[in-house]
Length: 100
Image (cartoon, rainbow, N blue to C red; front, side, top):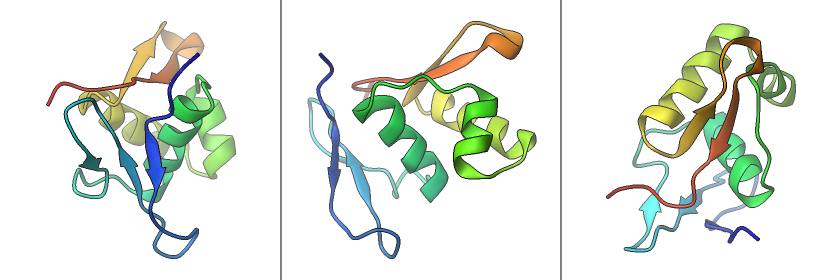
């Protein structure tokens, strides 16, 4: 069973801030430059254990294919998510901690 690594510190949708809590401390996702969509995607992937395709991301968050690709790629580049598979079958999953 996955451990939740997010802590809600604000009220949605106003100043909704989630924090990623790795083993060595707390990383404020806002300080990493993440937007609300990316934070919500991480919540779905990590807290709910979901794996999201580009299509699922677009449908859940109401964005274009290009925006979904850019957002998901940023999460992977930051070490907050990992890509599994290739092409249309590619899914993105959250990671429970990242290298600090």
